[in-house]
Image (cartoon, rainbow, N blue to C red; front, side):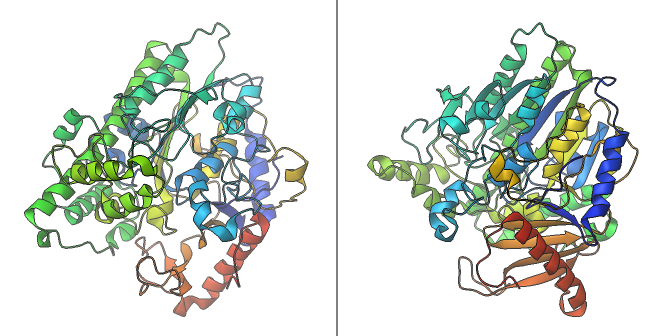
Length: 581
């Protein structure tokens, strides 16, 4: 039986831990024994900063036929929760643990400015070596294990993917990089990049586009001769569509003119398509409470630049889809496709940082000897339509397009609101009863036990080692989706279970349709750290956009949710300065 463990995307019964444990026991007992069941291949695909409604199968207009075919033939998950940002999500994805237990209670790059967190257990900024990863568990069970793309869980040799169970791995150590290979190993760029292969420094082929290269490198690994007939676990972690927005010129041209009507028009069109696809309840889709700026108030030149930003972004998503198709074609050609479970997800919501703020923030880490030249080049490229999207530019698409990408939700990456943590995900392949949409809340932490069940691999009880066991964690376990995927049940948790978050002092908790969020008040100015914070309460069944705080008329509900969040924080070692209430 799995040990009762906790998470910052955290499920705990509002009544008792025992009810969820019993549900977990039942799911495990219903699983076939490993001696009688086949072991499927597992292909885990993660997009970086993809918005909830970007894919066609989730309401978007971007051309994503390969992903759409997988999603619609499988099970689309419309209440799948991740962390507000990338590395905490990835730590939970690979371990099934709370990101504080996994060592990523805060992002490594944020720790220098969050001095209050430095040196605290769970806030190391890299994957705890005592954890057991999916790749370690499957490797022990006889799987070949491969990874390409974004790692972001530690840069030292002992923190590399090959130290966590991957046989082969070509990865980017940082959270993002130039998509054509500039700036690697100390080269002149606004953002430094370090690549490794199998734990050793490696040279990225300058000029190759990131999504093309990572997909092809994975195909190379899958093509390596292996006469044992062992199944594989492949983790394809795209660095797109993470900033800087860059893509092949031909793909950008494909979307020219498509976004000339602006973000509000795009969000409206996506909401309409989501209604037609019956992705979410009609009530939650109709409550579109997000206001966007007046597109007509911008100058012609500003609209051209803003539209080009979105054209580049769309090209990046299109490239992801084409490269997923490349991997799938290889699996079909080698006869492996029909025995491969595909799990797809985004690591957090759409990125809403403005281009100017992005440059100012990132420039702090640029080496002084070439900072002035790099900044001059970048600022020129960001305003030149002929250079935008090339290695000479360094842009993101800003909060307005991000809110369109987050439809029907509010806010975006880095925030606890739904737009930051509720992300697109789907599962397809053998053992999956397809052509379904599942709306019940699910966690990124669930992927590890799900994969272990689907592959008939023994469950690990949590972190390995005496230090981890001494923590005496005793909260609700993650839940395997296997009985949900095979059609036995429609949900793996009840309406009394909760999901909770903590990220850089921001907090949130959901129970059933109720969600409480703790953060700056609406009157606070951006960047005002001294502005007051408070708890707000929303009813997601009629207010998916989290626009109406109903805490005053539902004080007892808010008190119950805050109490559950406090239990989560205490059990997970979440550091909270001052009183929690």
